[in-house]
Amino acid sequence: MDELGPLIADFDKQDIKTESMTLDQVDQMKNLSGSYESLFSRKAMKFRSMGLGEKNLSENDYRQLIHEEYTFLKRPVFIVNDQIFVGNSKKVVESLAEHLS
Image: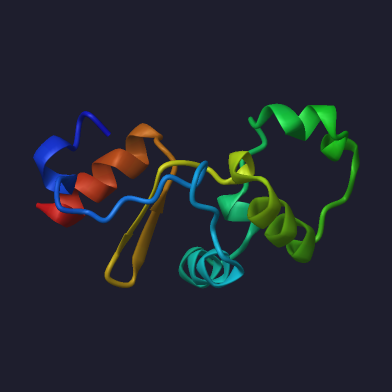
């Protein structure tokens, strides 16, 4: 996010650790990204501790997990008009920067 500096200064920010996401917000992100799985972070510490790697998760499972535990959402998430940018990979950050320029 430091790389984007002034490009994101005016964005509304939501600290999902202290202000939980609603199911409507999770559904909106899914509608923009195409699937709940694309929003889901397997790097979350609870992924292993809950044994989720051994389970065959459905889209509804991903939806519920993201809603119930904020660490399962890939972060950061930027919603710009009708486009969503999920995660902090170099490709995503570059795409967002290009979109905002």
